[in-house]
Amino acid sequence: MKSILLHIDHDSAMSARLQVALDIARSTNGHITCLQAVSYEVLAPGDFNGSAIAAAMPVIKENADNLRAQIEKELEHEGVPWDWRFVYGIAPHRLLEASPLADIVIVGPAEAGSDGRGPSALVGDLVLKAPVPVLVVPGDAKSFDVGAPMLVAWNGSSEAAHALRAAVPLLACSCKVTLASIAETSEKARFDFPSTEGARYLSRHGIECEVVEIPRGAAAIAETLFSAAQMRECGLMVMGAYGHSRLAELLLGGVTRRMLSEPQMPVLLAH
Image (cartoon, rainbow, N blue to C red; front, side, top):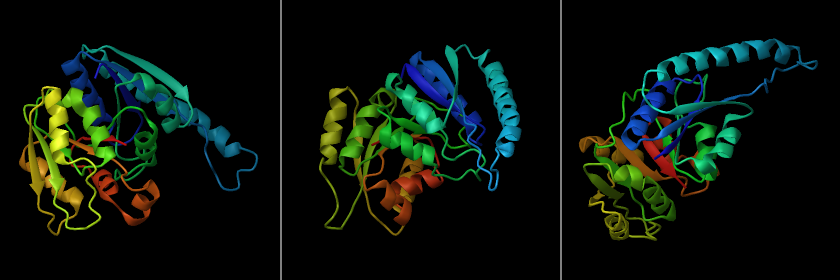
């Protein structure tokens, strides 16, 4: 992960993902690009002449400048190469524009100004459209140890295969990789690629993994996977995202949505 694209915003997970980006950059001799997108698209009911927008613009710019000064001050003494891109526009659009020459995009689970709970529309847009994996970092993450155990959530889908392939640079650093699938009794269980195929792919990259099948149980799949990862002291969860349509995930809930609502560790996603 040599080129790390870091989303800069005022949300509650900003400090956490900055630290994670620094840890990854140190471990991989990587470079951090801090992307700060500011939009003046302020909507105010009844503001027909734009007076509310005009009043908000200086405040938005001042807050953005203060955040930049704060983070640049922190980066000065970290010994990690970085650059800063300040752009106008909607954050998902600007991050997508910058992502083709990145190895990973690091974001928080929730929008700025929210209660800290996800999932955010920004994460959904990036996961579905970005050509690189998206690392979602919860606000309580203190650091990121690339040598820690890591768990790959495997359901045999093409999305899971894409996530596995995208995560290889990080999985190669882990002291122990677990490929975990949930035992499903439904006839609709999807196994385009059995877990043995995933393990075989990793072995070609010199990565050994433990293949486990976890009983379905009464708990939600997301909780079961998090429990399995925590029991193994994992520092990262890798999973394919939005195996069903994103609309279905939003309306009915789903593993991706549950994972991102309250992530209990950094989650690497790919679609």
